[in-house]
Length: 538
Image (cartoon, rainbow, N blue to C red; front, top):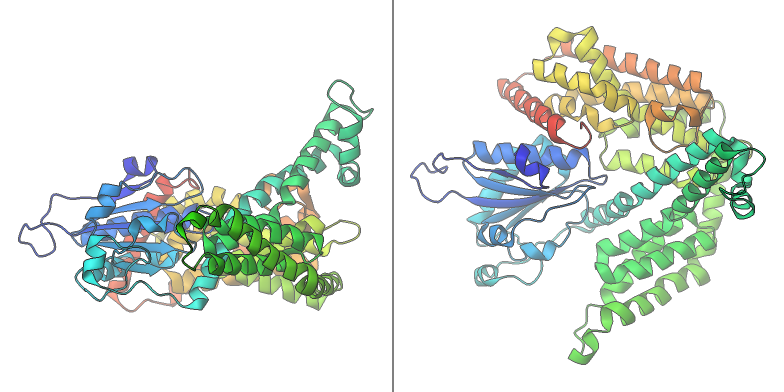
């Protein structure tokens, strides 16, 4: 699996007989794993599913659709597959390749936590003529089976659409935010109002009086500021893409830009993306004459969907959403004392409840949405929220590292202690997924312990008024943190509390079933494999 993963796909194969033991053809499965960030969960689920398939006597080839280059599954492999597994929180890219195949779909976290169950369900679906199938134009086999296409609830679809938008938005935020922080480091906070002027009035051959570092800081800040300017448009564009495929991208981006113009911000981007996506989907749904089909995706759909979604924002929805955004901003700016602490506790709990999953992404997206509008002097609340969110997100992996390598080594397996060593760096870098191998092995003790520590960190950070100009990076963006000492204290306090709570739970709260212990050992072992091959651990 390690060699295959280097090429962007992973597979399971064995010389053993199939599950029936009669030497007949082994069941063949294919699948896709994908999480909003395309980093840790994507590859952990792939490895866990591959290992489960091998245990159950099936061949499984997985296409991890991560944030880097994706190597698609061979069409011949897909054609031979008996069923498909989608362990995804976002839309599957080029899902039409799997049309007509029996499908089992679940969140990517289920692929990490319950891979055996997903593989068993896929094997059962392969033998069931009435099993749900991947929507689209089915191939011969799918058509012959006469099965109904896969149907998903509106709630599940909505979550997938929104997380798809967030997954494409995050690179703009991470890259742009770090460039902003670098600009502040090189040129000071006053560069926020001077960067554009510096770049238009000076050049490398005509440096400003402040010198080269100041000029480079202005360049970094301006590039980062422009990158952050795509945040809402990218969010809206890829929400619409998740709903209507490529025809939704242009109207979605336009709706996002209009939301920014109207002052509707992040909320306006969400609404605009949904409107554009629905409009593009319904406009493209009717069957049109052959001569018109070529114009539909490149002219007709983008034009009409843009008029509908952006027109609604300009004429009807933009003003009220902008007023709501202003009211929310004023409310956050007015928080102090107990109110700020409560918000910090809530954000800390959300960051730690699913370790990089949907709830975590909601809190993180809420923080980065206001980052570009934050100001140390005039509007510090968004920067305080960003600091609390980043600090709380660092706690789970750091706490797992402290508990497994320092406080209670004998309470963890050798595999977990190895993961704990790697978790020091992952936690310091604000990669919450570093705690997933521990949570997969022992969720009922790890998750509550993490949430307690995250709440402590969020509360202390908000109470102390800590600010962050950077959306990511952990301790490596220390220069972008206001009141660095209190931020470090908040993280240390949350880490220590989490670690001690986990140790106490391990000592005094026992798991009842031996099967649970076996599953824990398997999950921890799978986590170790991922730690060796996922881009995060690398």
